[in-house]
Image 1 (tube, one colour):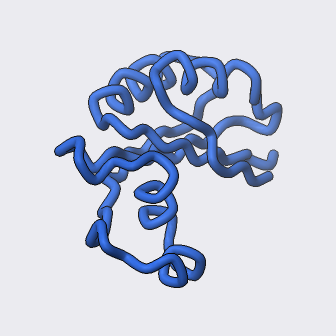
Image 2 (tube, one colour):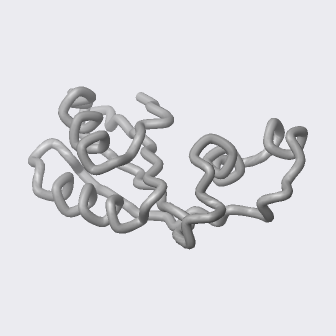
Length: 103
């Protein structure tokens, strides 16, 4: 049995909490873990963004620096079936985006 993982980003951490609560009730979701995004200085250079981490990318793509909320990531672990469509739908309904998937 091979688990599948998905990483989702939410610009608003409250939406991540809502998605986490929904996902935890699905039978095929093995685990959901929330991580607060540690977004760096808003004046980070483009080269630092290109070589940087996911929080840097989130800052650049979602422009979260002025919102007062750093956003959050959800690491979602599912059974071997993955159920990508259901999870991606829930993430999108809650205002997030799936940014990475691994088998």
